[in-house]
Length: 273
Length: 273
Image (cartoon, rainbow over all chains, first blue to last red):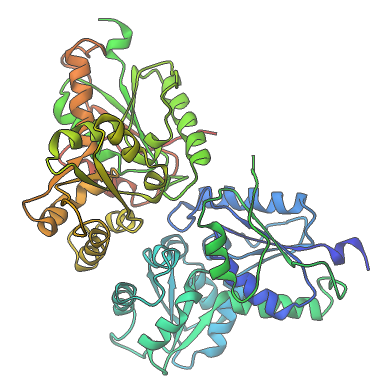
């Protein structure tokens, strides 16, 4: 076993929403350790410009690489949108938009896919661009849902106010002329916490794609195929070290909610400089 | 007329909400020019820790002082909470909590005042601490309203979803045993855009205090009293220069909404780093 194999996998997000991705990784990779960075001092990314998000992404990757991670998972759609095909990073970097795209293309039969995401992800159009490249002729309808992150942060995952807003956002992309949407991508790592609410409002005819879950399946496949070294069995516990750039008295409560049923050590404050 | 007198007054906020304060300043100070800094790259402050907010406040004041302002207005309640009585700044610094406190103490007869604010402002308790110091025996009930800033940013200032959330927040502080609240402080610079909605829901028995408006009255009094040098008549136009740390395609639209009926030059991007 080399040092690299036993090194943790770095995971970052603008805040704690990316813990829903980490939850999926933990479920599929029982031997791996994870170093999670939540950039809570600059949260959210989803309302900011591509240039600003790109700068934050580079700082976060640098930080994790300096901490010795063997790979980086970008557990944030807005940050994933800021990656470029010609990026060369010192370790493998995995992002959520490719896996979400592949899962949606595999799921849709009507060839009409909806993407619910933050304003930044929708403006960048990364899902639409990549889905059309992967499956020409596919129709992608996007909807920016800027209030869903605040609702999730407030724990309002089963609330009539949240339902009302999701219904409005759905009105923008469902129905209308032409073939019906049969697949909806949850294009923000906060949204999986709203999956039961979406399920209830959408009914059984529409497939939900959780990009973070799709990503975790692909990372597990990378390790199984030996393209990323596997950690030895029986590593140290807890398996998650949680770092944040700003800490509040709600940090550990939110982390527990997003990561359940898994657990992390209490969040530690770090400075990205 | 000295150079200092014709220099602009600096105004800053975590984002564009502070433009509601600038709007009040413009209305009362027809000769003054203003340099507004919206720290949109790190917005919002209201959910962050006192240490992080303090760091941002110091960087913003430094930035404005280097640009030659003759005074700084902290047009943000969360940032105002981070100021300390023993701070010594190179120019006069005015904040919103003192003026809001004085206006509320003057307005209340039941001696029971409610404060609606961000989570950071409520956690710091600055309004409660200062109101009790100014008027012993006064009762202050605070309510953190974390969703109101997102609603205002989305332009949902006259929307049933926003009304429902305001009603919930009111339920936490109105009614109950003891004397009734007769004064409510809008303790966040985004909230004045919700003033008509608050008015409608509160009815006529409760006085609304807009801290930004109270601040602008006090700054105008400082100038009238000669404690801050007055600008000469007939200065350059437009009177507002708008700087932001992140720019999006919504920046100028939001700025126009918050500043109406006044106008600013198009926002320019600056780097505090």
